[in-house]
Image (tube, rainbow over all chains, first blue to last red; front, side, top):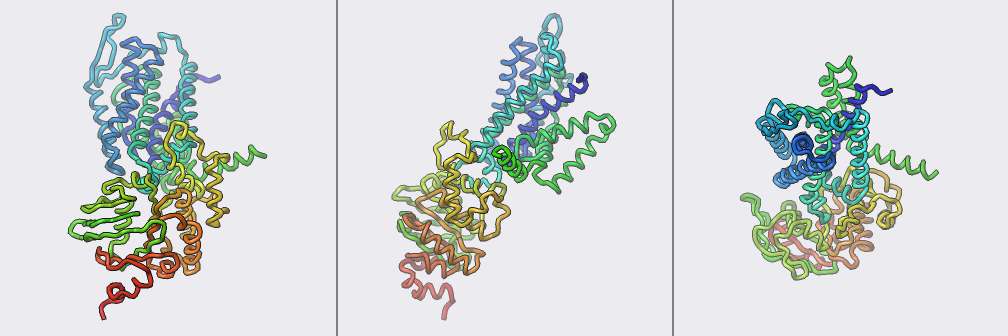
Length: 301
Length: 247
């Protein structure tokens, strides 16, 4: 039977996958964001405040945190949409650090059942007890995470096969040619950013309630760098690419105790090797297309 | 009719276009020639909205489109090709062609989520017909980035056909082609592209110009030096001077 440690690893993979998918959406529109962890963090804090301090229902809080993350992402994107490349990456990094530094100073505490709860700067935000209060087992919560991940994947799967998905990839490959095709990339880039922020937010809110304790330091730039690398390793041809990256890193490197200490060395090396050998990851556009053709032929036979 | 009135464009101190005025007649193919650096590509970049103009006016069918963005001009039915080929390299040939069609649609929510790569989609049928015209039907599942140069040029033209614009601006469509390939391109333009459309063709290869153009415009140093029937234009002393130097 699944033990709790294995379940924690599996649920971790699910939550971080949402962050990786968020970074992936921006990667296919041609932008490298070092700041998706900010939206993960915004939603983790606001969602946890909603359930713990305000007593809101879980699903409402989940939507609240994720929408807030999406709105923040939309505002940042509206400001940065006209810059691209390195400048875009730097501005996303700057924003995410602003969020982290704000959380280090942010204190909002309330007495709940005789206990002072809520975020308190660098000391973090503990006592996010929704899971315990509602008697949710680790197994049930893992199922919940995978239900949400599944819904996100279904949505993205349809978006990718739609005209919208094609426009995202057109913008990612050649923005000028996309404009010549009568498409204004600005609207689509902001939309992609809102979508990415929302999905990162789903992951962040789930993360806060899974670990019951969060602190600003969790949402530092390394989390963002990892979420970018997951797409680059797993592949940018399909939404399943980043999931492979997450499974490789968290499933193998972080969770197997023997290699845990060498995780960053192995992971860094893996990223470097992948960028040379498979610049667009394991499941890149070509392999995905071949797999799809093979699958289609197989289904028709 | 595409009309350029007293267009000026500078990059820093370099005056690329000096108050140039050109009328491009509807429904025919106009050639645009001139020595290297005379401002041909800049002119096409301005007509397609990629560069803003410093002063002057651009009229499309009598409507002022000066200052319009490239995506706005594209929606008015103007499409262009590039001297340095631009295709979506990480898409297949057929996806490249479909990409020129999806941007046509007004975006309803359903249009967003319509399955573009579904084999039953009518767009796939249209794209396949275009590939047959281009003699590329066996390449439809290849990635555009893996195509040879002449096939990339053909893909650009296939995209033009898929887009079905009123006005087409060709920037050196025969660049890098052999004489035989150029001839088949000329045939293709005359047969499938030009009829019913307004075309402007920038080209250095005079055999292509001679085969497809009904009107010729010559520019040099950012100024128009001649426009009219090709046989007349070629014999004007200014044109001979621009190409061969002063006697």
